[in-house]
Image 1 (cartoon, rainbow, N blue to C red):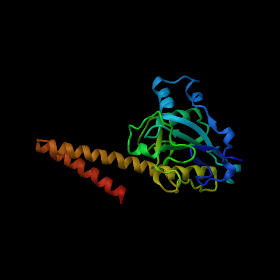
Image 2 (image 1 turned 30 degrees about the horizontal axis):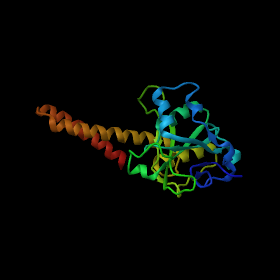
Image 3 (image 1 turned 45 degrees about the vertical axis):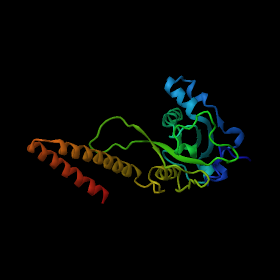
Image 4 (image 1 turned 90 degrees about the horizontal axis):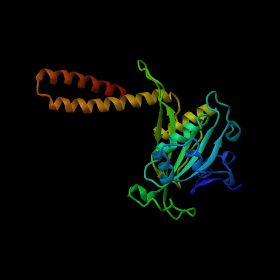
Length: 254
């Protein structure tokens, strides 16, 4: 069986078992099916038309295709290739696809011409590389997850996109770890988000990451406010807040 490829990237090249690879003949998904029914905004349609060269189903991870136990939450994991014409991963495109396929967890493999990393204005008329591999290619993995709700916070659950680092497509790999499909998904998400395969307490790690980002932004603002403040009372108030935020950040990072 000839397995599916997104440009030169395939399930096999990523190190996935051939038992989960999609046959080449059944792999290509027409872009139009994602933006014609139901119709989307002109902006999103342009993202599909201009930023995406092709969409390919590379692999289907199920208990019987990767020899793991069934998960309680994860029914299947789709590995979908996005052959892109743009520099940055097409987040809007991936988020729309994920909404349409909400019953499945999706791991996206974005593939681009490596030259786009040096020149973001590279021509969008040209295809991204070619099937012979004559052009250097890069790929990045991407997932969408529901943001963990932290204690004391209210509101509806929101989806967040996470994009891994761009890497040489020839050496990119996707190790599978875990005894159940739930564990496999958690570990794949950890690879994308944190660069490791430890999916334990992933929501707690994400909440901590979010808090660190918020505190870092708060400290930057408070430092600016402190430098601009003229009134000594106001400066002291800001300094107390700044000291508290820095202490919290140090505790989280220790």
